[in-house]
Image 1 (spheres, rainbow, N blue to C red):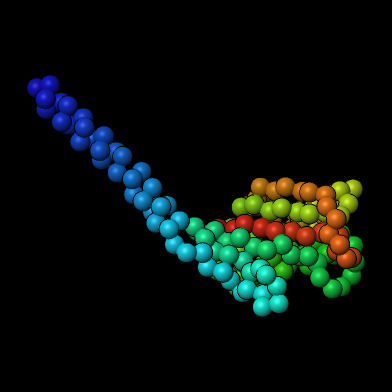
Image 2 (image 1 turned 90 degrees about the horizontal axis):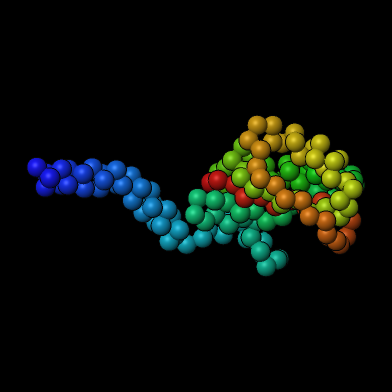
Length: 147
């Protein structure tokens, strides 16, 4: 009787672990794929994005040409991120992490007003860092999104 109990118990434990094994195998399989370098810039040593392990890692985006100031530059940077994600098969609601680089951390609140418009529901994890960007740019933003 004890022998049948032990065999039944071990069988049920093996079946209970099976979903975890298949998830682990799927994750291992995804990570063994080669990274996909998307839209490499022929004039610079980087790609606009890299798809790997079910994620898209975007290069930092600045506000580019146009009206100066942290709010208009934040808007243009996030519009550029939105465009890239859509071209690469993702979207803003699949962004899981952003890093915001600000020339002046005193402009954080002004940047945050515009930033919040782009993430009304699914709010990604975020880090803000004060740095010197060089040139006239006030903000640069990079994101990681689910593919």
